[in-house]
Length: 126
Image (tube, rainbow, N blue to C red; front, side, top):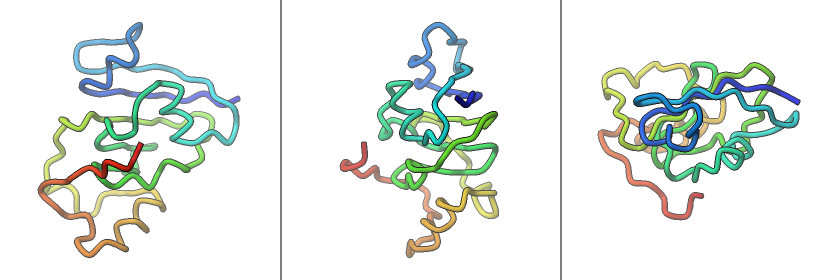
């Protein structure tokens, strides 16, 4: 088993009712080894399309409409932060941000490199 330090911000804090504080929730979650972000979202019962920006150990792993981290394997002690779609991240701070390998690869394949002021979510994502 692995133990994760999970932070839920904005409306996502509602998925951790027993640990909810004003504006956020912090929960420790135990999952089997080789669990992924998708496994964690399932454990928390959070639809992936409800999350906006996501960080794993301080590295950007997903943002609205770009979620290449669903198969990212988590490790014991990892810190994961999920922000709701309504959480804002100032545009000027996006350039040069540390990213997971999956996110970096995904953005390098995009014509806009992920640098947009607005994002549309893909209805096909779960």
